[in-house]
Image 1 (cartoon, rainbow, N blue to C red):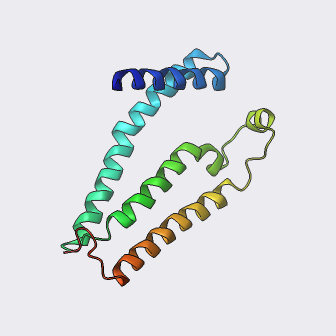
Image 2: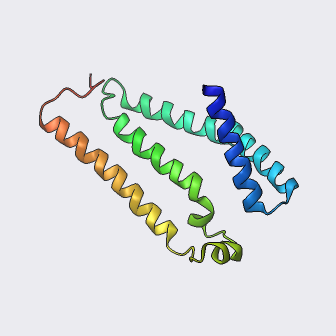
Length: 138
């Protein structure tokens, strides 16, 4: 079943890449290889090291670590998916196809990130205030 889902995701990504790059097969292949290489050689070690630093910095009181991990992971995923729009590196083709401007994505991403971290802080504070033992809290 997992293999079937993985295969379906590759087919869907291939279709999206082909439609997005409008039949430029060299760019489609380069995009797939580039994404795999960048993830495996740059991103994975980067967020692995960042997580290890976070856990070591927490010491024995690791109860708050997941309240940082989850919003950071979600924010990073949003940045990764919407990077072309957030960075402003969008061609005129986007506006022509979508009929929308790419302006404001960076501000919206920052707002979503602030809400994610703020929400996690509120949930953590409520749990601490209620006196519940935070998992891993020493």
